Amino acid sequence: MASLPSLPPFPCVPRGLSWTSSSVEESAAQALKGLLAGAWVAQAVFATAKLGIADLLQDGPKTATDLATLSGAHASSLHWLLRALPASVLLPATPKAALS
Image (cartoon, rainbow, N blue to C red; front, side, top):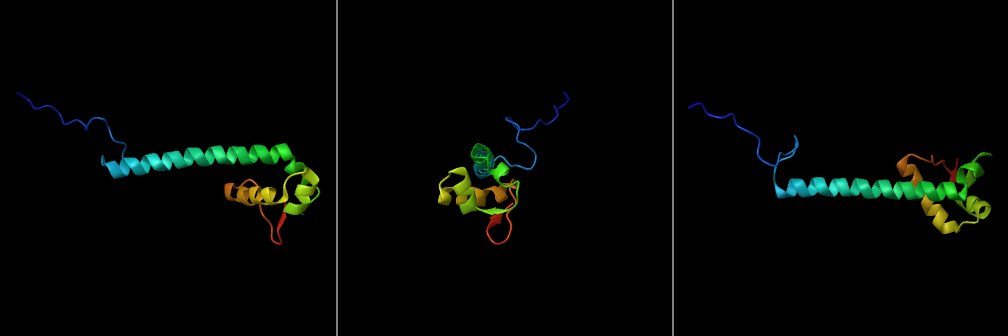
């Protein structure tokens, strides 16, 4: 009687991963981080759009304090929001604390 071909273990493991609890947990943790980061970036973009920051920057760079005054936002909160956006490559930061 002929032998059957060897089959991959069930459930199949994606290439590059081994079927150990630590590699599966790391993969799941990376996927969760990606989902959370995507949601966070989406909320930051929404808040920036709702405040009209892009329109306020049409005339040139402004500081976060200037933008807060013009948009009616809380200055410290807007400062941290705008600092986070360059990390997501949405709003380039310029030297001297001015945003463009």
